[in-house]
Image (cartoon, rainbow, N blue to C red; front, side, top):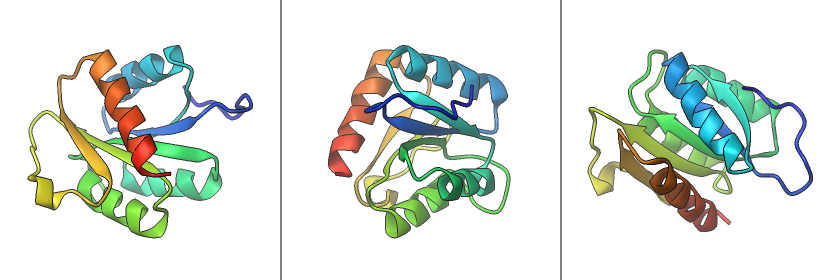
Length: 129
């Protein structure tokens, strides 16, 4: 689900995951909570979307992905280049130590409950403004 048009005041979230089904589920949850969603299958696509969409306010990304960098590296790049963009990392196999996380990012372990994910997203959005 890629939403090119957003309503005034709607927050845009970029969902990054190489698993198409996981991306779709997360996009549906976010859309149900009133977020506009755009998607990417890896970090390279995500950075391209960020360049195309200055309205993106948050990124939710898996850590393990194919491509030139993983989610942790991408999060560090986003936070250093665009600290106003919130980043929430997730993984079912990789649990980073708190010191491995870029500043003002959070991590939640898969599988997550939708309400927990939304609460954590709201938290990182507050940290980034």
